[in-house]
Image (cartoon, rainbow over the protein chains, first blue to last red):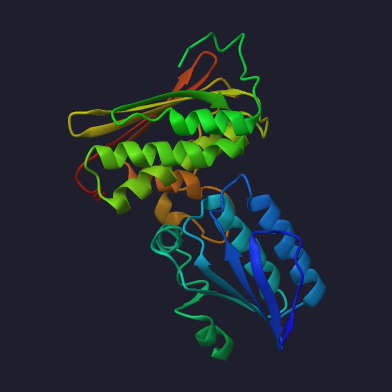
Amino acid sequence: MSSIQTNTDLISSARQEGDAIVIAIRGEIDLHNSPELRGSLLDMLNKYKPKKLVMNLSQVPYMDSSAIAVLVESLQKLRKSGGKIFLTNLQPRVKGLLEIARLDAIFGIVPEEKDATAAK
Amino acid sequence: MSRSSPNTTTHPSPAAAAARSLAGGASGERIDLRFPSDPANLAPAREALEKLALAGGLGATAAGEIGLVVNEALANVMRHAYRGATDKPVELTAWWQGDDLVVKIRDWGSGVHPLEHRPHPEKHNPLKPGGLGLICLKKLMHEVEFAPQPDGMLLTMKRKRTPVTHP
């Protein structure tokens, strides 16, 4: 396990575990700051080329559709190399929006990080 | 809050100052705000609407949905009607009218009707970008009407105190 430095306060921690990257996102994400999150995530995916991206959203009380679009873009990038995204520790509003977007079955949604790192 | 002519006025103050005035502009009964089309204003705008929704008796989940809807409608104005310009005027008004929370958003942008050429929510491909904001509007509000104006668009939405049920 090794920690990864990021250039945004929106990612409060990031580490590599085998072929997975586990990150914690922090804050309300909307059109104002989603471009910043997008840049950091895509940089990370390009640099580390993980098979699995685990995003802990316990510190994310809110996302809008621009934030969801960032998640979808990251997923599509990972899928090209057979990778997956797992979302953990969802707060109710974020879960609700993923359901409206009908993305709750497309991302791997699990209760906690350990469930995601163990999942195939 | 003053209502000067949209043709002569864009909000000159920085987004942060506008955001502060937004947060202070929400009274318990009515919201009447004018601010620039800067995404920095999304958070205070949705918080003001959530406060108004709660004050009118909606529960926390429903109030959160109202906040999301206002966020999405304003973001559409910023991204599409104003094509990303951050200094154009937006008016947001909202009030309780009987059992309805009425929300109006006025812009002076492209005037393109956002609901034309959009797929039905059930046909929406979740992995295709775009369209989710409008789906939120239609799913979470009882009424959504875009009224083209000679110089922009007026969006009127209503949410009743009762949950939204669509056939």
